[in-house]
Image (cartoon, rainbow, N blue to C red):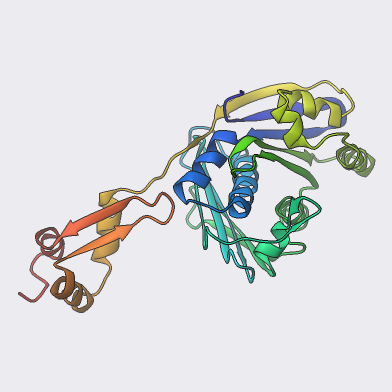
Length: 296
């Protein structure tokens, strides 16, 4: 089975750039960490692939990050995935146990999400991160992300996300392909690529499950035009939380509130939303953080 990674590709004959992502292990890890229902696991898998593809445009090995969040009226409430330039991803769902109806053998992810907004935050190391918020058009992750890229970032884009999910909710394949026009790319070229995506004889997830290489699948979408692989980066599920980071969070709580917490529990326990790791701070540690600003 191919290891998780993003690959950057240039198709010079068609004047398009292409990013591919294989995310089977990341998707399986997210489902396991959050004990997600099969429906939420599928949604998180698609979010992970889409965010990894956006992260492929970050400067490799830099401190740049991209975050994608969907907030909706559906039972899952929120889906959030972050990726950095070193290939690390982390994510969570508002309600990991949420479920949705199955129609014609397929889970209705649009129903799981409902009406709401897509937020994309790019932290490129400038003074302030770039944030864009867009209403969801369909609640289908691939469509809404491609729409965001085309409309908000003015980059004509075609995006396909594929998964092969087993009956127990685990993944035998997961990934995605993002194809974007460059300055001067003809509209006809992108229309042809979109037609090739619509005309795929087998879904991307099933092709990956069958052992097909994702770059091979990409070549078919561009009618066999020459592809130049520019580089690739391994992907892994990794969180950036730490005791030091959460200590800073505790320092930001008012002394009065901290005093009430200590009186009740004689300490504070915080849980990272992304990785579910629990951090316990004992009373003596918290008093040291506040350096005498707490009542005895």
